[in-house]
Length: 230
Length: 405
Image (cartoon, rainbow over all chains, first blue to last red; front, top):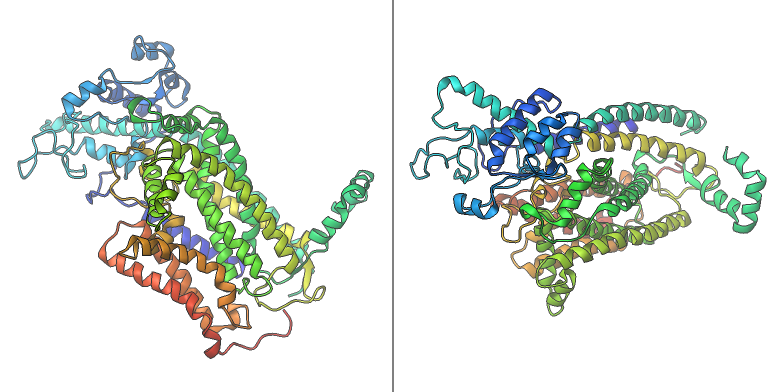
C-alpha cells in the first residue's frame, strides 16, 4: 500500500467514526442545542451564580474547591467573592451542599448526584443538561405530577423538581430562563474538565510542531532513500 | 554519525567488554531488510513506541493513583477520587492520564493493523511460525492488561465490565467457580479485586516487554517478510535497517503522533469510544447500567461470546476464536505467502477483516434480534475462514510469482 493510499484510507476511517460517536441520548428524543462557550468568563461566572443559588440547594460539586474558583483563570474570582460563597467552609473544601444525604432521601426519594462530572457522565453532555433544565412539561397522560415530568429524561419521570421554574413560566421570562440554563450548562461543562481550555491551547502548538517535524522527516526519508531502486 | 561514534575511544572501551559493535552491526547497520516493504510494515515499530508510552505514563499515574474501593462523600470511592485528583490537581496530570487512556486504544489500533498486515501478506507462514505465535501471546497479554487497567478508575463500566468478564470464568466446569473467586478475591467484584487487578496491571506490561523482546529476536533470526512474500537474497534486494528503515519508521512515528496527539488534546473521550460515558459515574453494585459493553477493542470477541445461547459454549467459542490464531500457520497449506498472488485467499482475508469490524460493531451496540443474527453469521465466517484454509490450495490457482522483488 502506497503512502497516499494509506492516508486516504486512514482519514476515511477516522471521518466515519466521528458521526457515529455524536449520537443522541438513549431516550431517543433529539436534544436541544446548548449555546455554551467555556472560554467566556462572563458566561461561566453567571453559570456559577446559577449553580450556587439554585443547584447547590441539593447538589454538590465535590471535585471543585473554593480555592479552584480563584485559581482557574477562566473564573478568576477574587478572594472576597469566594469568601462570600464559602461562608465558614475551608478554602480547600469542595462545593458541598448543605442538604444532608439523609434529608434528601426523605424529601426526594434519592440522593441528588454530584454535578462535578455530570456533563461527561451523560450522553449528549451539555445539550442533555440544558434540555433537562428546559424540558419540564405537563404529563400528556396525566399520570406523573407536574414538576416531575420531563420530556428529555429517560422514562420521563424525574426526581428533581423543576429547578428553574420552567413549567408555566410567562412568555417574557423564556429568554431569561433559557439564558440561565445555557450559563449553568457552560459552567458544568467547564468543571467537568477544568483544564480543557489549557489543553486546547497547548494542543494547537503540539499539532503545528508535529506537522513540521513530520514534513522534515518525510523529506529526510526521501533523501536517504533516493538511491534505492525499485 | 553512528559510524563516527563507533570509532571513538569510549566506544572501543565499551565494545571490548560488551561486544556492542557486533550487536549494532548485526541488528542495525548490517541487518538486511527487503527493500520493498510498504507503509503497512510501520506498525511494528509504532506498537513498540506505544508500549513505551504506556509504561512511562503508567509509572507516573501509579505515583498518584490509589487502588481502594473505600467509599468517600457522594457515593464515590478513594480510587475514583484519586483519578479525578490526577485530572484536576496534579500538574499536567490530565495530559498523562489522557495519554494513557488514549494510548490503550492507540495500542490496539496499531497492533490490529500489524496483525492484519501479517494475515494479508502471509507473514505467519514458514519459517515465521514461531514469530507469529509469540505475537499471538503478546495480543493475549495486551488484552489482559487492558482489561485489568479498565477496572482501576472504578466507574460503572469498570465495575460491571469486570463483573461480566469474571462471571465468564464461572461458566467453566469443575474449576470455574474456584477460578472466579481467585480472580475476584471474593464472591463479588470489590476492594480485593481492585487491589489484585492493580497488581496485575503493573505485572503484565513487564511480561509484555520480555515477550516483545522475544518477538523482535525471533524476527531478526528469520528476517522480515515482504509484500511479494518471496524469499529474498541478501544484498541484491535488501537494504540495511539503518539508516533506511530507521528514517522510514521515524516518519511513521511523526504521522502516528499527529493522529494520537489530535485525539489526546482535542477529543480524548473519542465520543465515548476511548473513555466510556458511563465510566464517569462512580461504581454502584446496586445499579446495573442499561447497556454493558466492553471497550471497542474487545467487542469482536464479546459478540462471539454472545452468539451462543449456552454460556459455557459461548465462553469456549470465545477462547477458541483467540486460540485458533495459534494454529493459523499450520492450517494454511498454501506454498504462496502473499495474498497478492492468491486470488481466493485475497477475497477471504478481505471478508475476514470486514467480518471482524462487523463483530466489533455488534458487540458495541445494544443487542437486538437482527444484530444477534448478524453477529452469529459473522461468528460462523470467523471460524470458517480458518477452517477452510487447509482446503483452499486444492482449488486455488495462484498467480505467477515474480523472479525477484
